[in-house]
Image 1 (cartoon, each protein chain N blue to C red):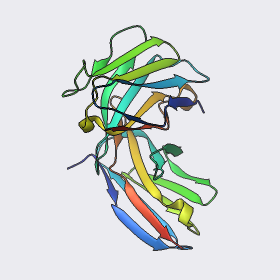
Image 2 (image 1 turned 180 degrees about the vertical axis):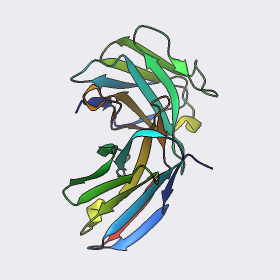
Image 3 (image 1 turned 90 degrees about the horizontal axis):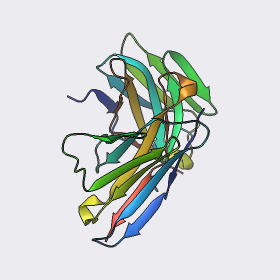
Length: 116
Length: 109
């Protein structure tokens, strides 16, 4: 199946700084990527849908200015957490539809963000 | 009530035991994913299935579409199987992913 590479796998940053997380589709073109966040002891929740060449679609309650999503090419989507706060510490994961598996998805391995 | 329910939430077993993790869902689906999240956080996709049964090594996944239920089995469990196992369904209406909350499995040596 198709592969999505997500980097970094973990990052520690200081409060007030920005952090960029990348997801690359390695062997296919992903016109749409999905970004999720995992809260403690809860399911992963969709944050936003990233569309190549256009603005991302954010879920209700997700701050657009805080979580900047860029999908400038068919193989790269980025999530930037701006002016990070300790409350932003979480696990973030991206996914894309796997064209080789019908409606199935392929997943990045996730990024553990810790803001100190 | 969540659309995807996993049980149990937590499971501790001895090495060698046969493990079953369950996933029930209330929506129509086109397929279902099982994923493994390691203690460090990294996620690995284990299976995608829409009917029947799949096997990979010591892992077996089954799904019953009529009963809206899937199970993940681990045979001859090992401490390295300790992880969180997550079920995620693909809704048939909009093909969006709906995630279960995960089952935390600990295998003791």
